[in-house]
Amino acid sequence: MKDFKNKVVVITGGATGIGKAMADRFGAEGARVVIAARREERLQEAVAELNSRGVEARYKVCDVSDLGDMRALADFAWEVFGQVDVLVNNAGIAGAPAAVVDATPDAYRRVFDVNIFGMLNGIWAFGNRMIAQGTPAMILNVSSETGLYVPGPMMGGYSASKHAVRAISEALRLELPEHLQVGVIYPGIVQSELGGSPEMTSIGMPTDDFVNIIWPQIENGEFHIVSHPWAKDYAAENAAEIDRAFDRYAPHFEGDQKYDSKWLANQAFGRS
Image (tube, rainbow, N blue to C red; front, side):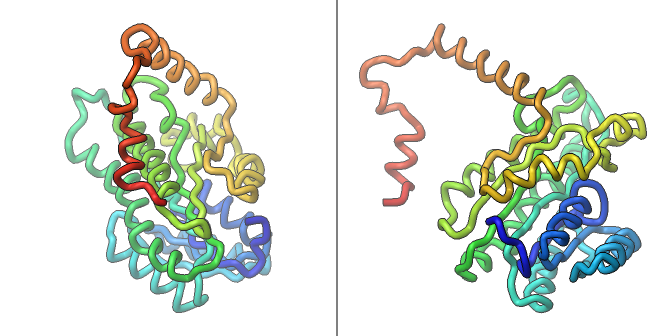
């Protein structure tokens, strides 16, 4: 999708950080924008700034972890603009760093509620309506480079949630009709509130630079949308380690197709 003029774009977590930078870019390309977040004051500021640039923008207070809120967001977007062409499931939280053995169920559950179920709630609230709309459309799910690898200790919960975003996005790509594209975005550290500490935020990539990198990938309908080059190296290290394990302990053998899960899944559920 290369022409966003008059398209309607809904962005969760759209008042600050990556979401706001994406709203700015979509608006600059002529899109009409709906941003959603929990803090109304930030939403009002963001919409006022967008409007001052000539962007037709609206906002809706929304907690992505609440399916009812996300359905209300979808109703709002369709009532105001009559269509939704792009959904950006961007809202996310990092959670407090903790070793897996020391983390609390409530802390992990909160991260999963926002990062996984927040995305799923967006898909459930918007997906079938975008399918029924029948026009070219796009769902963009914001994962993280930690959805490709685990960068270090104390990040198990966050990384697990972002791996889930990737997996669900891959499933969507297999399931949705051709007119509804899917992309998964893998940011590294950017200058946003998700960085946690001021130190982490200050060393991150500026959000406008980040959007400039991912924009041509969005226009070209890429599925894997990347930004920070070192993530490639760490993801490749993971893949190489897995390759070595298979080469040593589970190489191909005659007749092994009967145990091929992907082949079996396509036989059972694949489209003709």
